Length: 457
Image 1 (cartoon, rainbow, N blue to C red):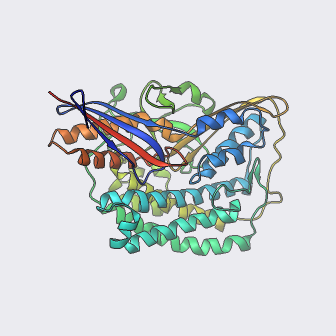
Image 2: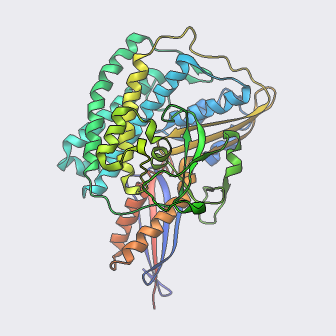
């Protein structure tokens, strides 16, 4: 519609992302004057009603934040509370936590790759439309998702909002007989995952890049999933570093307890969710960051698949900064998660006890894990009885908002430099750019209002 010399376009819905939000683009001629992504993140509400609860409750409460990534919230909460109480979980319960997280990576990443993101590259409106032309690929994605769900069901008691996770470990450990069918299923899934990497590697990727700092957990000797130290790979050209986006730059880390000193949240007028800055700069967390920081620690089969898929050899410092190629990195991570799950199952021996007791004490604890969408941070403060007096949750999508807005601005600006796109074409471009980051905008609705405002002269 036309209003005071400006044209405004409203797009009623954005499919194939989780949540609710609104995008506003301001255009003046061939220049993008404004790109604002307003989103609504549930964790802001959970922080309030976690206060006053017992220290044993956050794993079950926070799992309800997300139906696709409940394990990320459960295990981040467990690590933070255990840290506050001075307890470290080791042995088979710790290994099974990683196995459980692998299950979530497999089901969540496979859902995004096959059903949410792949249609953008293949000219389909969605998964149903894609199934008409790429039925075998969609069915392969569903098999992978089911394999991940099977891990959650065996270890967590059910695939959505698992009920078997508790502080210190699990309520009950599986038997070797219960894990044996999982291994058989995962060996078939490994072939499916390898085929998925080859499939997505053949997509046509637009030229794009990001110059954000990359933030991910790092853990010695392994690709970080369920624990680690926050590690930063600076943006190319930062502090005199070479502006080569395809090679790894020197990283630096900071203690997890200092997370709030480095990742600072602030309110912006156009969003009820908080934005974050890493040492005053935009940053990106998620698969591109994980691959940059720890790609050399992928299993041999995953590292070889990454190299053959055109991502380069991470062992030689290859880094991917093209957000469109995040789908390839996610596919590689699915392959890694399947391979890692098989390794854990093969080494499994039931422990004498399913958990370590976590008695309450006064203190503040910090926990972070790598959700499929990126680094998820929890902080809890307990009084001597174990009652929670303060809670802070920083989800990956909230951290990524600034980077997503900048990517949107750049990609629209690049498009305007080549031609005069219609509003429908701009809408499609913005939807693709948003889906590159697989944002979890909210856990109840799937809705986005896109407003394109063109100044008239």
